[in-house]
Picture 1 (cartoon, rainbow, N blue to C red):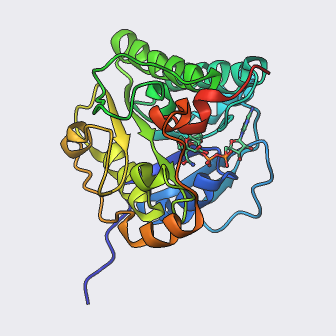
Picture 2: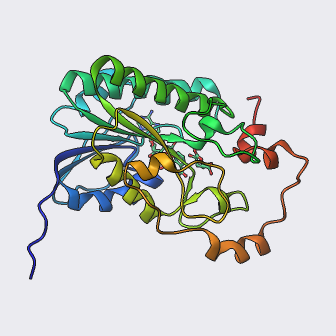
Picture 3: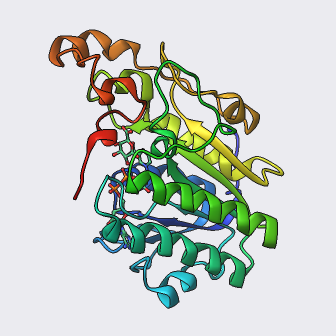
Length: 270
Ligand code: NAI
Ligand code: 15L
């Protein structure tokens, strides 16, 4: 019998741990660290062996910077995850991400994995393939906040040498929920693999990658994801027949159908 591999990290921090993706990552990270520190403003349940529960509001600077103490690397998944008025998005996503980086600087944390979003570039047309070097074209206040998060990541690398992989996640759900998601879907298991690759890849500086599965159609250049060692294993094709039977075709004249961000491009004003 082979002995189990020792965990690679001592303590990892996961913000947004009570959220949909936090709940996906929580069990998948357990084997890779001795201590998993979980934070959120929403209830976190009870601590399993090896878990530390640290409730905190991201806009609370003292509480959030303190989360980074004694941490090897941080997975920043907390914040507003949908399009909302800027006044709601700003404190959680922009101030909150600043507080995470300040905590990393103060406590000497060298690696952050930042849950960015495809909505940083959501106003690009679907007819073109977009990569990390293309200009951001956020499709709303949420996308703007994620672009700010990526700027913070770049700045904290250039100024302080804190490395980040910014994951422009597509649509990470158990299954694609609509026709657009046939192109943007990322499975939960692939997310787990992507996050582990982002934690372990050497010398990433600030690297931006799209987090998308092995889907038939894609709008995103995946070369950077391959460079950090991530190759998706699952694609959306097995869901296509059911999605197309259930969901009416998109109106091709609508902005939502023409732009990569889908419905986000037409939300508001709030
Ligand atoms: P979610 O909304 O289910 O989880 C976000 C968590 O952040 C929640 O548990 C919430 O309580 C917490 N949170 C919100 N405001 C907070 C605050 N002010 N202080 C502390 N915690 C706060 O979202 P989900 O789907 O789990 O997404 C996780 C991250 O990944 C988010 O940053 C989201 O923007 C990003 N993402 C998710 C995608 C997806 O397909 N699920 C796609 C692209 C990006
Ligand atoms: C996101 O950034 C959201 O957090 C998620 O809820 C989905 O809307 C996803 O993008 C998407 O583009 O499908």
